[in-house]
Image 1: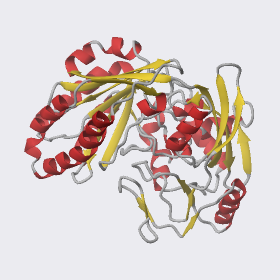
Image 2: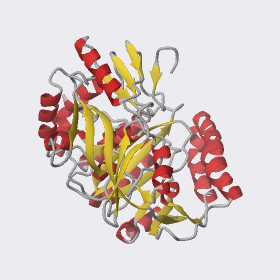
Image 3: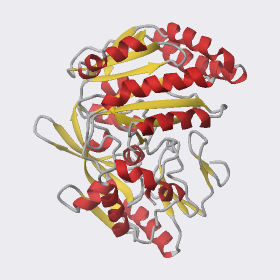
Image 4: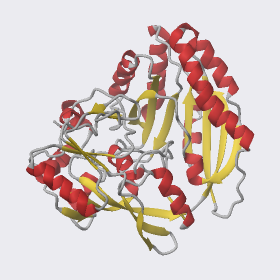
Amino acid sequence: MDSQTWHNWARSAAATPQRFATPKTVAELSAEVARAAEEGLHVKCVGAGHSFTPVAVTDGVMISLDNLRGVESVVPVGESGALVTVLAGTRLHELNPRLWDLGLAMTNLGDIDAQSLAGAISTGTHGTGARFGGLATQIRALQLVLADGAIVDCSPEENPELFHAARLGLGAVGVIAKLTLQCENAYMMRAVEAPARLSETVARLDEHVHGTDHFEFYWFPHTDRVLTKHNTRLAFDTPAEPIGAVRGYVDDELLSNTLFEGVNRVATRFPAAIPRINEVTARVLGAREFVDRSYRVFASSRRVRFREMEYAVPAEALPETLREIDRWISTSGFTVAFPVEVRFTAADDVWMSTANGRDTAYVAVHQYHRRDHREYFDAVEAIARAADGRPHWGKLHSRTAADLRPTYRHFDEFCSARDKYDPERVFDNAYLRQVLG
């Protein structure tokens, strides 16, 4: 917050609403929404503000969910885990240790844990792993506050249309108050990180993706170098072999944050040096192996400020998509300092999920916040669109309802649910008008 103006983490979106609200209970949240609707004001909720898009921006009432946090109930499900009901504003970095203490874990997680649970779910946070879906696939029930302030429960059995729309709903059909997650028994993970060649990694892609529980890699543009990450699930009682304090500081703090910030400042002033910088950076990030709690392996600290766009393409289209991006970078004269992140998920049935109906590869491109991202992002977007790519809802893109509708088979069903549950567009904003019409 700067005075009365809210900014997202990336400083790529800002809002100066008429009123801020911080309800402490679901009843107070309901009252805030009802009051805003009576006053003819738009309502948007915000968690950690980690979306790059203006999905949370409003000119009316901005509701922070920060006071709606914590685990409300845990219901064991045989020997396979438990149904855990969590308040919507709970941050992932708070939830994961709490679940661990209960002997539980999330099935999949993204690579940062700063977001609120509701925000991560509503914008399609997905993680990686060819056998696993994104976070929304772990939802079993929701409690929502609708546009008139009504508090409604939904699940596949109760109000199923609302459930299918709201479990990845962009904040368009209601405000999530509580979420019930299918959590599994806690598990350790072995992380094996190693440098490799892009050409070799792509040639053996099927082996990497389907032979590892959670696989991803980072490609350093202007080079044939990548950093691969193979994360393998282990039993809960596997002894931890964490990264040593010194190695962890050097790799995760000094190289990935402090030094990387400095490198990007230099690269901003001297972009011609970026290809050489990338070559050196790729060599400095050496191999390492460790065993730790699953959530500690999934997430890492990201403090260097950047802009990001991420596209979900059919898994089989990934090699050609990367070749086209490499070709554009090589011929355009544009220099790219940030690695390109590549991840994978299984097909799912979530209406507005970027993986709906197809096994998916994700290509995420980044640009340091002091450099103009538009030329690079526009080029990558055109390449991804040619492969029927779908943009991550919380990351920068220029798509509109007209060209998104053909790639989402449930697009019209989602819009019909929106019409039914928010006919007066209490939850509307410019971003939703862009992507939903």
